[in-house]
Image (cartoon, rainbow, N blue to C red; front, side):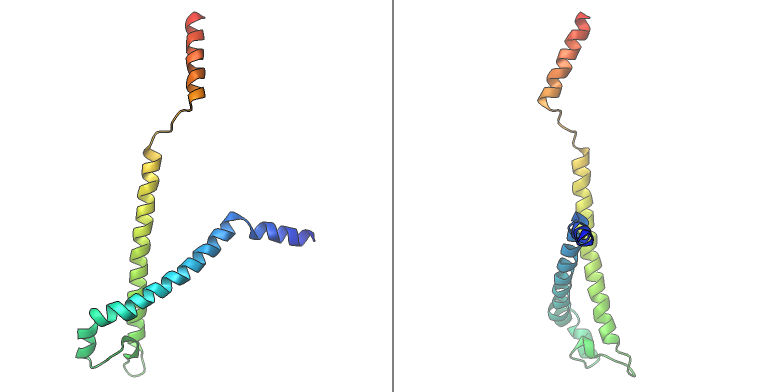
Length: 124
């Protein structure tokens, strides 16, 4: 039973739960990016290039058995994910810098204690 308790404590640590949430959100984000590449970018931006090589689907482009179309689609997805993640990290860093730059508010009781100390030192 001790081992089960230890495993439960390990599994319920904040880092493990945060990681699980990140993996789930990452999977959902991946499907959004895939849809964006396949359903938006490919038809709108890549259609002229695909028509030039007489292809209708980016994933079906190949040359002597080398499926470079799938590679191009994966490359576009990677670039989009990397760009969005860069933007998120940059925004988070900006927010953290603003919080760090803001001076901490001194509690009222500490201010009163300082006044008492200062007045005692003057009398002293």
